[in-house]
Amino acid sequence: MLSYRHAFHAGGYADVLKHWLLVEVLSYLNSKDSPWTYIDTHAGGSLTDFESALARKVSEYRDGIGKLWASRNAAPSSIAAYLALVEAFNSRGKLRWYPSSGILAQRLARAQDRLHLFELHPADYASLIKCFHSRRVGHCYREDGLNGFLRLLPPPSRRGCILIDPSYEVKQEYARVAKALKAAFKRFPQGVYLIWYPLLADARAKKMAEGIMQLATDNYLKTELRIRACSGMGLFGCGMVVLNPPWVLPERCQQTLPWLAKQLAQDNSAGYEVTYKIR
Image (cartoon, rainbow, N blue to C red; front, side, top):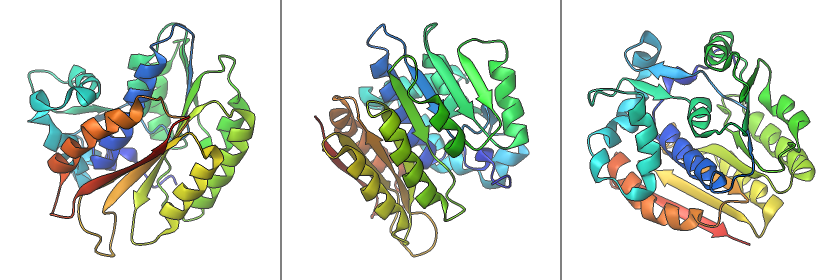
């Protein structure tokens, strides 16, 4: 949707969970010299300025990275890499700038790795182009990522990470994500897929997540982060399904999620859940 702007929600608790897991996966891929390919179906922009009018309209970062910022030095080591990347964009201890998923991937990419970023919104696309223009590591596409990413599979490297995180403001996106993943998994079954979804009173997202896990019945991880009780109105948390997760990821989740749930809690119902099978 062109009315949706990621800057409204940049740095919120949903970004924290999504981006921490992304950093974990790409860092793991970096443990081998062989190249990897990163594909982002809904890349958003590049850097969000929390002092901009767009970011101040909602200021979701105050309930996300803003809550972690003051206590970042006491954070568990399992989330240190993500927090260090955010800190690298800010100076003198002041939190003002927040990197998108594409920028985080760019920071972790090596000369041999490749990034493919999809974004429909013209302003956010223009922001991406400024960061990736004339850089061989990154390619940007102004098109629907759920349609476009399939042509990139399988990547030449045969090692890859695909992040899928639409806004789900259009309810048909749940079915579109499931359909696209089914097609993608046939083309590239060894890829690492990260799929973000909202936690709502409506069970549609959870049903989608359960269906996605059936694509890799013996090699998946699902984690959910609740920040408040379900009131029947709006999000009360978010989840991520990771297909073909790094074998270290379940332990990293057990080390990190208790701290995240405590720091991001908005009431006594906050908590987390981790379900996985690792081949």
